[in-house]
Length: 209
Picture 1 (cartoon, one colour):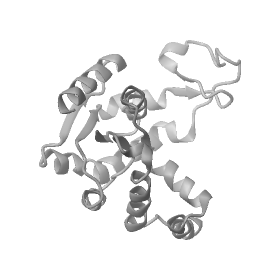
Picture 2 (spheres, helix red, strand yellow):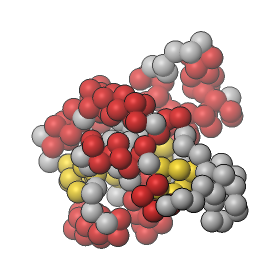
Picture 3 (cartoon, helix red, strand yellow):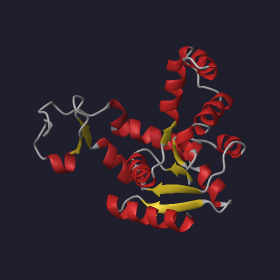
């Protein structure tokens, strides 16, 4: 099954996608990860992307689509995959249609104010990667797992989160209408408990299989 995940930053896409990939035995494909891999491996298309990245420019859609096409052609994608982080715009979605058949688009919907509270309250341990939230930390400032001091990442401060949400609504949210019009979109309430969201998604995917 070929799946796209949509949703604003902090909606829980990564968490849900990983669980579903484990359940279905398919890969989770992150645009950022495969772009960095293509550049590191110095593939022909990776070298093209590197020129733009080193110049501080956005990698053009045609190069991103070429990298995606190469990744989807690999053996582990034969039974399906989850695309996380691509497409981000309607033109990218239109280009994707030419190289892939998508079965379902999963949207995790979360209120902006809730996302701001969720992300701006997040604290992380740089040593072991553990994640916490101020709502449950109380007075604690260190990691339960390794004792390292917890920090707030720069992209988790309230102003940065608001900017990221604005970019999402301007660029990516139109994809909701695009895929809804094609009958592919399935929306889920990302405010629910993580396990409840997962169960709802799996029920829909089971009906689509």
